[in-house]
Length: 362
Ligand SMILES: Nc1ncnc2c1ncn2[C@@H]1O[C@H](COP(=O)(O)OP(=O)(O)OP(=O)(O)O)[C@@H](O)[C@H]1O
Image (cartoon, rainbow, N blue to C red; front, top):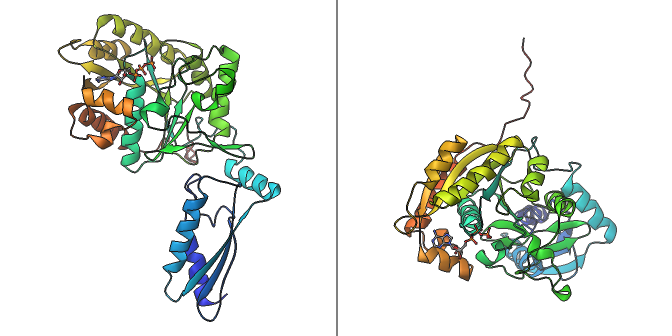
C-alpha cells in the first residue's frame, strides 16, 4: 500500500456508522481503498442493508474524510450492500456471545426508574436524565418499558421512529445522543395498536419482550442504561428484578402523602428482588402540592433524596414538543435540578460491583 493509500485508509477509521456508533473500518464496511498516481482516490464501501437510513450520512462522512487527506485530488465512491452472510457475521460479532449484556458482569450502570402511581413525571424525569447524561459525554441507552403509555418517544421528539433491523439485530433510534427503544416502536398500527393503546400483555409475554429488548437490541457498550418502568409493583418490575438484579432503582414521587405511600411500596418490591435503591426524586415540588413526600419515601426506603424538582411549565411544554429542557432551557430551575442529579450519576465510576478483580488472598 502506498503512503497516501494508507493515510486514506486511516482517515476512514475516523468515520462512524451513526447507528452502530463504531468506525466503519471495524464493521467491515470498507471493501477497498486505492489511490492512483494523480491523487484520485477510489473507495468502495458496503452498507448493512439497502436503504439504510444512515447511508447518506456515511457517504458524506466518507467523502469528507477522504477529501481532507493531503494529497488526495478527488474521490470516487462506490456504495454497495453486504451479502446476507456478511451481515450475519457482523451481527454475530457485534452481539458477541453474551446473552444478557447488562447483567451483573457488565460495567454498565443500570437504573430502573419506578413510581408508585402514574402521572408523577417518571417518564419526563427518565428522558431528561438520559439526555443530560449523554450531554455530559456518557454513552446512554434508554428502554421504555412503560406498557401503560409509551411516552418516551414523544418526550424525545422521535414519535413514529422505528428501529433499523440488520438481520436478527435491532438498532435503536438515537435521540439527543441517547439510544432509545420503546415497546411503542414495535406496535402494529394496522392492527389498531398505537402509541396511546395500553398493551394488555400479561406477565410471560412482557418478560420475553423486556428480555428481547435487552439482548437483541444492539446498544453497544453503554455507561448507563435507564429503564422507564410502569408505575406500581407490576409484572415488569418483577421481570426486571429477575433479569437485571444489578439494576439500581430510582423512585419518583410527588410530594403528597398518598403518592409517597405507594412509592414506598414499589421501592420495597425492588428491595425484595435484591435490587438496591439508588435514590428518590421528588417531582412537582412546591407551593401547589407541598413538599415532604420525597423525604418521607427516602427515609422509609433508607435511600438518599436526590433532589426536588419544582413544577415547571417549560418542562411540560418541552415534553409535549419533544424538546427536553435540560438542553433547550438549561436555566429553568427544574432543568437545573435534573442536571444536578445527572451530574451526580455521571460522576460515579463504571460499575464494578460483582466483578472479580482476579485477586486471591495470599
Ligand atoms: N415538574 C413538572 N412540572 C410540570 N409538569 C410536569 C412536571 N413533571 C412532569 N410534568 C408533566 O406531567 C405529565 C405526566 O408526566 P409523565 O408522563 O412523565 O408521568 P409518568 O409518571 O411517566 O406517567 P405514566 O407512568 O402514567 O406514564 C406530563 O404532561 C408532564 O409533562
